[in-house]
Length: 319
Image (cartoon, rainbow, N blue to C red):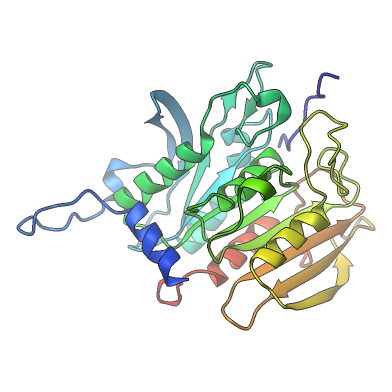
């Protein structure tokens, strides 16, 4: 059966050393001065970068005053959506101005059906050769280097296919993101065979129990045509087990929106060893959407995500 169009939201010190090397600037002689970063070469708006001979587009949000060591938040759009829509609708532009981090919105490429996508291994993309992991890695490295950002404060969030992309980046053998916040996203089953978390990567997931696109129970038999993927509880089990998190709690539900009966249950797992944690915001009755806010009606979902990322930054670089 031809898969339906997935309306994906149209709207550890060793690890630190490894990532520092990943984002290191080109070597210079001892007589050359260290380069100073400058916002002059970058402006908020549309830019391109060439990866594997392919020109890739992205949008950038820069604060008026960018401080050395600021964080980078990568925001991935959903299937058939765009970076422009993600920038307009998900709420990070205002937070960039308030908190001084950098937000980047990568643009997916059109598939055979003309729908923009990030290549995470859907069954109907098996012949697509686009390497979006390399695109994201090269883009983050370029921005970290040119703008003087903190390589230990690179984070990823996104909607639906963009949420899947967050998980995919974090499951790589050498991940460069330190925390992820996928919304309406999941993990393809094959990833659990090929990858496992190699860094202390924290996860903040947001999923609705009545999502008809990213099914809460998953689709391990691939009835929908996307490829076998895990249910949300299975995704949480995967991360909790691989990160060796032994503590857990469930927060009492609160209304998501004052005019609805939707409630969010926060499930949290953590460890005494460090600050690594997994959070699941389970929206009872929630559909395939980016909610306006979660447990606090005065705090947007984007702001909750930034707060989560901020809590997992190196202490010395927190604004």
